[in-house]
Length: 144
Ligand code: DAT
Ligand code: MG
Image 1 (cartoon, helix red, strand yellow):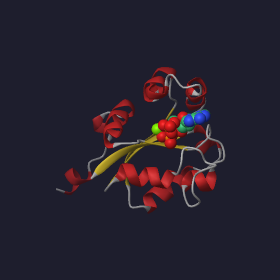
Image 2 (cartoon, rainbow, N blue to C red):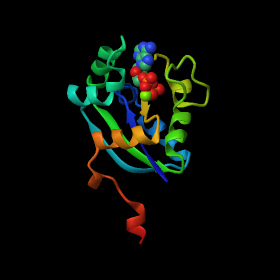
Image 3 (cartoon, rainbow, N blue to C red):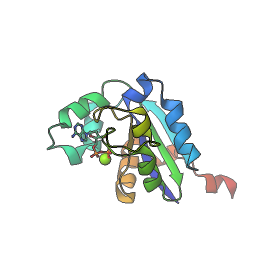
């Protein structure tokens, strides 16, 4: 079992695509174990995207993710990291395959609707940035 961080970026909320995107991820068999709507501040945005600090698009990226509310979620399931990445499609919607979230619903690399952690290690770090452990539901504990 793996957990991964999913962010529905401001364009997803603005365009009314939240249900559609969540539906696609749930359709892959992933379970929502945490979810909240938040307004990301500059400090959190910069930490989350720290790996891109030196890139020319960094400032715009931070500006966009802090511009309006987003939805942060943790999805859980077998190979959750890879399943979400595949469901999202290529970073650049112009290259994203049809059938993927970005390939079907987005057009602009700066407005690509969704974030998904890119490795198990990154997922662990990113989840901690957005959620306290107590906010993440543990199904197995509930069932026992
Ligand atoms: P991904 O979101 O697929 O993991 P990434 O980590 O390389 O992609 O980049 C993070 C975000 O930064 C991406 O979702 C959109 C933005 N971005 C990446 N490359 C960009 C570019 N060349 N121009 C503008 N924005 C870009
Ligand atoms: Mg990334």
